[in-house]
Length: 170
Image (cartoon, rainbow, N blue to C red; front, side, top):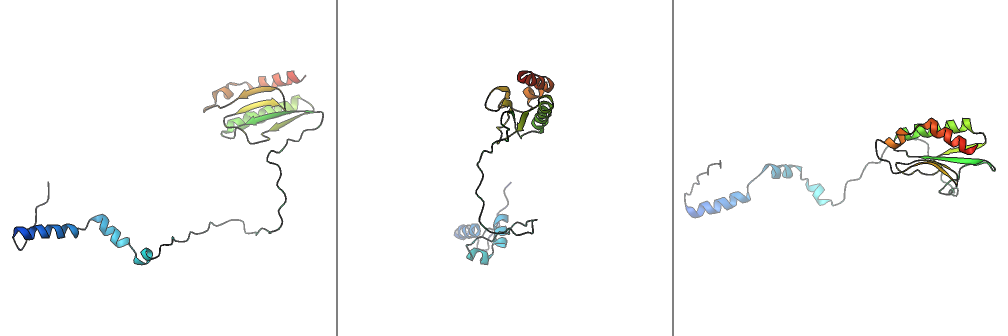
């Protein structure tokens, strides 16, 4: 229901029209009152944004500025002994279950094979990937683009995978 109209002192029809138009111009709402309170003339006159505070650092030591050492290549090569074979285990960093299985395979292969170098994630791994391969050669297990809950990888029997790889090398 609409609020009742106020009676004007001049009961004339022309004066009510002018009064309504001036009342509409002077009408104060909650939002306009809030804006009027928060508007600060000094801020409006200064168009610059306020300065941001610097983040505090926990390291109190200052770094010595000097000539920088040349950067190493983007793709570090795994340390492989000449004459020995290397097995690369690439696992995603998205979930800890990848890491536990990769370490299980690495420990099993190092115990089962002598003279084989096992490298875990020599370069940045692909997302949703679990792959066991010989360096520059045969791929033993390749599970790519897996989505959660990673049922393909969790269904693998890691002991069987380890024993199969050991048999291929012997």
